[in-house]
Image (cartoon, rainbow, N blue to C red; front, side, top):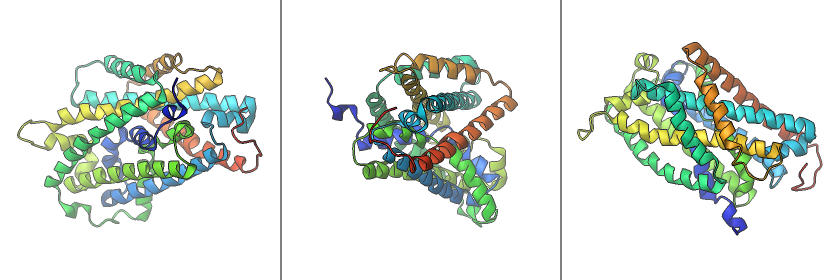
Length: 365
């Protein structure tokens, strides 16, 4: 028999879990996207996005604090009743599956563009789906241990990006405000979308050791790490490429890796991308694990293991469907609007409603 503490995530595991869920494929293209609006002030846009993300985290924390011991799905039932609550659970399941499919598709698209040019899309999607299935069926503590181990790979990733500073020209950043304040704020919107993943706290928060304040501090530190990492990547790319170059390069981070010469090996991007793919697997697994838990609550089962294959199959089919750039862009837009609703809108409304609803602590619907 496992003790209660062994079933709970430690604060350090919680920290790594949020980082791995939050850092995804978006960081590869975010310098290009931010340059369209913020130009030299792209780094400021990321910092603003980190601040906005922290506000959303605090809103979610207030909601979770109001219902101790309950995850998002149980809170939906408790706060909204059995009918509306189950409808919300179904919607959140769809939201998480859509995000999983989007990350799958984006990952495969990047790999096909740079190193696996002749590999069919369905094969790559299948390989990532198999890896995701292997992990998503496991317990939360097993995922946390794998995420913690995978987090050590940030060391070579940071090294690779840091090496790009040897080609940097600081003057490319200035003037910082050349695009204007409003464009920097617009850039912050794109950066915020690239940093989603922190909403996994709605699933894992009740299963983490520590007080409410300690857990808030842990996820805040994780968000700070992600914000600084994104800022470092964006600022490095801004100092290596000028504004016109960034407009023409869709994935500046990979292009930077390709241009580096380490003498021992010629193309750093061939080494960078497989390492980065492990982090992307963690993001995919997180968004497959969450809907599996939702289905467990919806159908009143005790184990999510049997639901994980269905979630991954649906994600695979959704990711396989978009073929043209227009279809891929439509999926990206759907994910963006879905994130506004399910990551910001609904948690905010639920938090406000919880202030006017009396309940017994820990009571389930």
